[in-house]
Amino acid sequence: MTFRAKTIAAFMMVLVLTAGIFAGSVINGQNDSGRALAAEETTKRTVSVSGEGIIQIAPDVAYVTLGVETSDKEMTVAQDANKDMMNDIIDELLRLGIEEKDIQTQYYSVYPDYQWREDRSVLVGYRVSNQVRVRIANIDDTGMVLDAVADKGANIVNGIQFTVSDAKEAYNKALELALKDAEDKAKLMMGYFGFQDLTPVAISEGSQGYPSVLYGAKDMMESASRSTPISGGQMEIRAMVNVTFEY
Image 1 (cartoon, rainbow, N blue to C red):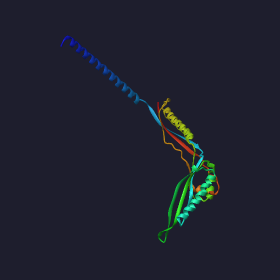
Image 2: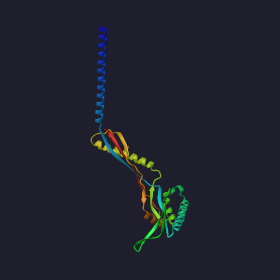
Image 3: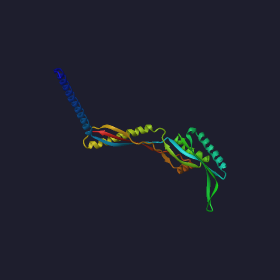
Image 4: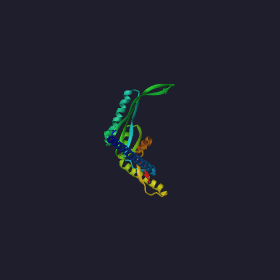
């Protein structure tokens, strides 16, 4: 090998060694940075709390399931009688201002009626049941509607539910209360140990729902027979949150 070739080879070896040393420094620097970040993450101090908000609101909409059950020895006779009575009930509902879209069939059945006689089951006729679910947009009309359909022959009432037409605004208020409740709890707990500065780093919403108020069928029929207005009272809308604070 000539002197020139030896010189070039030596120069190349120096370059390779220099590059290796530089790469190692970079890798070591990255590892050190990663370890520093991991250490910083593990030293973060957090506290997690839950909060609840409750709003009391008066319902403004009522739902009631009502209908007619008829029976006769002949199935067609029972069906015709049921059809005539249900038509009268629906006509009355429409007359009272309830829209067709707010009257929905929930159940219709025709079934044989058996009775025990002399230790055996005997077919005595047929029963026809037809039920509709009615939305009453003006809750104050509930008692009047029940009176009216009872006069038209309604003999099935499965209960009434009171709810609100738009619960979003009320729920948002309950959500604000829930967040405030979580903040107050965190400040109380950490303030006890002398920590005052809290920063929310994670927030999750709990399960939500707008429960309706159920009014029993028996109470409904008694109220209707007395022509007593039915009151929806108050209902609760709840919101739940889970919040993690860093301190």
